[in-house]
Length: 76
Image (cartoon, rainbow, N blue to C red):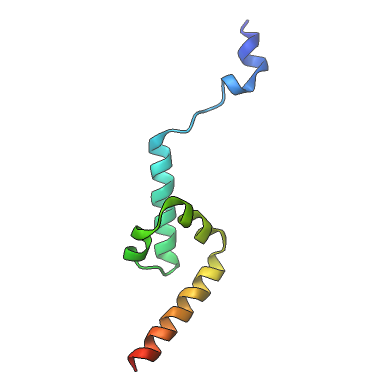
């Protein structure tokens, strides 16, 4: 019986793959677009910024609403 792999969980744990990372990043980008960011803004963000923005979605929505109100005020 293979006791080494049974006792040492690190030898049998699943490894992260590049395809799974890209898929998660794509899903996170879609979530930001659904929260109200434009696709151009989302495309400029790197992965670390994506994750920090998704940690507090309500705060992000407030920031986007404030920016939209400010842009509307400058146009008028």
